[in-house]
Image (cartoon, rainbow, N blue to C red; front, top):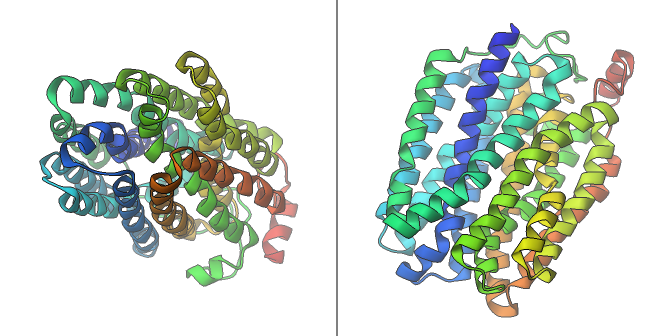
Length: 413
């Protein structure tokens, strides 16, 4: 692929997945406004997050595999972007918990395939030296910038000045524009599965189903890591806005300021961690930055001043950089090019099912019974366990292994 196309694809896919998280996180930032009008509880917030994660998990795993089999990724991506934009907008028309639950669940179906399809397109178009960086920008920096830096102040301002319903209704416009960009400028990827089409370690055997994929040690470990790391991520993004308002009594604007620091950290670490892993290796990067990420939610409990909390959050919210590694880069470097979307969909799907579906509901009920700080302790554990599991990963970074050792790793798996 020409560098110009690689850069253009990187920009478009970054916008696509970035606005997935703008829409996904919108409810978390708007929940203090929504809950007042609709009389919702912390348990309701947990169930809303869980419903989206459940349908996201099922959709991501099934449609990711379907796109691999059909070699038809571009139409799936266009349809997904249009659908999640429309459904996010319709959240502004809800009249109660059940209707909001329905729209969030349907939105999860639409958003599920965006990551595995986007990353499979990007893996095919990226040069080996830029693969970790490119995937980090799409998987980490872009959703951080659009979903967690731009999202909080824009959504809170719209909700404060025009109402939370308007904030949801206006979310349709960016998605339609992005769908048009995909239709006009993205090429369909048709990997032949050659070992030299992307310089990775892959298994020569047929990996046509999930059971076969799970025989690969790195894929199996990434699935388990995803379950815990999604707990870390979903618990923080779902409950942190309400936690800061209810527990620390921050104003809505102060809360949005702190949440924006999460976003800036997401953007920065989203590409810094994968870029560092290109040099020091995927495995040590996962261990180091997961340990740092475990500290972040604990700081949010014990630091009571927003001005002090903000830079500490910025320094310790490193986990989204790790997301790129276990959810995209390591799997892409551990399996056959023809099954990348299947592998990514499996990891994301199981992770969303356990960490995204079960954890928020459990955390929400725990918060109602034991107080809001318990959700942050749950989040901390969600990053600590992956740090331990990462010690058992096999290294896949091209800079750290030779082509011969890569083939040896694949034959062992």
